[in-house]
Image 1 (cartoon, rainbow, N blue to C red):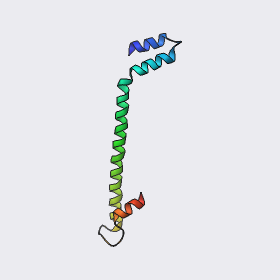
Image 2 (image 1 turned 180 degrees about the vertical axis):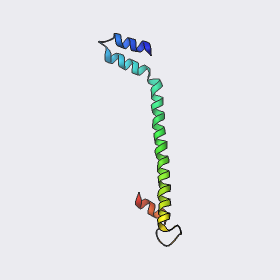
Image 3 (image 1 turned 30 degrees about the vertical axis):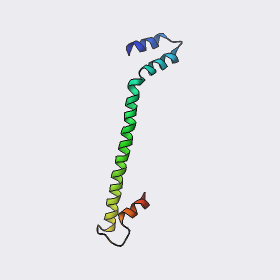
Length: 82
């Protein structure tokens, strides 16, 4: 990595070429990490969604009184909230 930056400092005229060369050579180590972060965000958003649905379902049952009745069941109330 140090040699790449020294090369970049010496090549003032070809600055953009040198930057693209350095970025391209280190892409093999950075792109998998970016991909892992993307997968992590997708997994967390689905987890938060499932927890949110459970919380809304619990709140609907609490509003309903906790006992089943002839009113709308929480599972029918849930899509109307979302």
